Image (cartoon, rainbow, N blue to C red; front, side, top):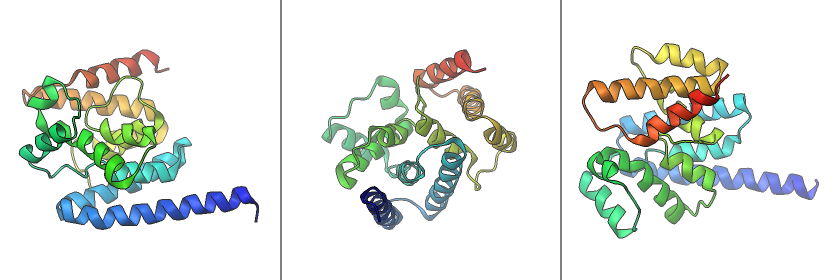
Length: 204
């Protein structure tokens, strides 16, 4: 066996060990319903990664960690943010539910020694999106909306678009999010608007 092949095999084994370790710990910090959702996101992310030429192991790791802090209380999220000196803006502070992406990314880095910035960005930005998202970020953002357990009026259309064009599907997901947030009169983060406009300007 060539050295390159051995290295690649080692990487896969390490990724599998890491994934299994995260899954076991995840069960302790989120609800069973959330865990089932997370596994659905993992499956969707790996599927989209294979379809659109992204690293499947990176997609799985980002997906399994994306909601790691989702069930943290407002107090726990804000305490973690303060203790770890994570920079947040006023909107994130007010709309505290959006903080779980930043907290999960920090946990991924500090507790699981994940240094890959693309994975960390995908975890952090899955709540709002952002301008100039990488392919992995788009995959995690979209997978959160289309995993098999999701059931809402626009999901079937979004899944169909996801089969044809990643950017168009992410754009549709962003549009849906914006409409929904406005309909419930909640704060809309500017990152979501910037993500939407950037994709729309560059889409064919």
